[in-house]
Length: 221
Length: 221
DNA sequence: CATAAACGGGGACCTGGTCCCCGGTTATTT
DNA sequence: AAATAACCGGGGACCAGGTCCCCGTTTATG
Image (cartoon, rainbow over all chains, first blue to last red; front, side, top):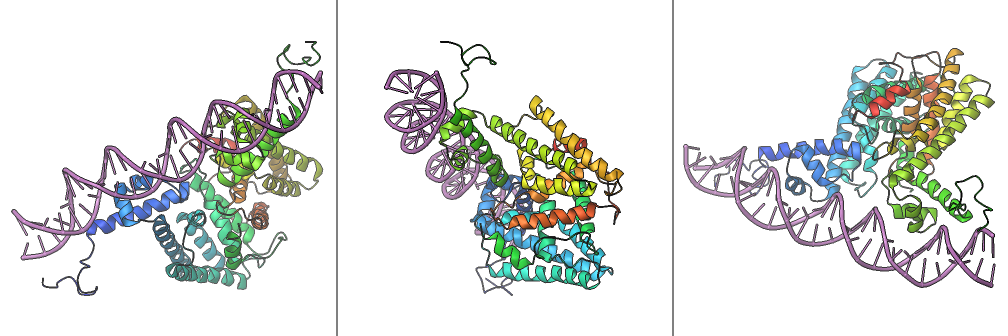
């Protein structure tokens, strides 16, 4: 056995997974993300496998616990959304335009899926998750604060308000996989953003919602 | 058998249901409405019965088919929302304030529940339903047109936009029966309404959504 | 007070999701 | 290019949970 493979990994016994195995794993996560958004994270394993175009055994082999799959999906989704936020902040000069771009971009990534994730068993305190969440929060918080300092965003709203409304508005109606619905969603997001713009047109009850508020409330049930 | 009872109904054999029977039926519909909102219309029959404080047999006796129950719940909900719309139009002098009042009132009635109803088997063309829907549409359409004519509501939005966004924003997060969430919902509805107010702050893609659009799209899946 | 309608809980049936086994297929190695 | 081992996929057994009915008891009516 000449060691041509085991250069960076631990000695031997980790000969690198096969190419199609990784491809399948990726297809599964993608399919799961779509299914979770549409039917919730309790959707049958076999359905996910079918959507991914793989046998159910492959799915069970890759993710023996449902928790693992949810974890992977949430992580990948948060990474993508964070990416959107960072690019928006970087490439958009107008602070409110940056906020718009983030919002619409996040909608395209189906952030609405993050909410239903919080239902069942799901390791909320996993290190990976905390790290990724920190990145996301920092990015969005940055967008919000920048726009507020520039006087473009009303100051009686918080990151939590934006994120929750965004999630709610982008959640698909259960029955419809209807594509034309996307058009509606964009309209409503833009309307909501118009309401977010300074100066404020009305007085809001309660307090600006931070992300801490969200975490606390969503566990209270 | 002296016919003291069968005055308005068909001859005999319809001696009027017992008092507690009607009371139970009402409690069931109320419980079902709450459960549907929170868990979708596929929620187990036994759970509904438990929430209603009746035995499951009573539930099965009153609504042998799930369709019947959904039908009843939708009908009762639409009636209540229509009521809200009509009172808002009648008692509020400012046209936009009427719109606000309707929106918040409808949220209290949990219109969000109407959406998940459209998933499974559910007789969409029942006469009762068509009639009630006509009343509702007329009432809301009236509110919208009045506000638009008064120049208080932007003209690039339609009844469909309002109803869909309203439904979306009031849908509860699956996991949380969290009461504090209501506070958020009101904030977001008010923000959305601010975005709806004339003059328009941005240009929207697509066309103002009528209720016809909604019906067409939600069946396409 | 008599009576019949309505109630409620417990248990049998059955649908539908989970999870494993094993024969066939496909990427890697010399 | 052939050998080999990892990976794949479908079918079926197991099992949890929802549905639905039966029957002894309660309660409104006249």
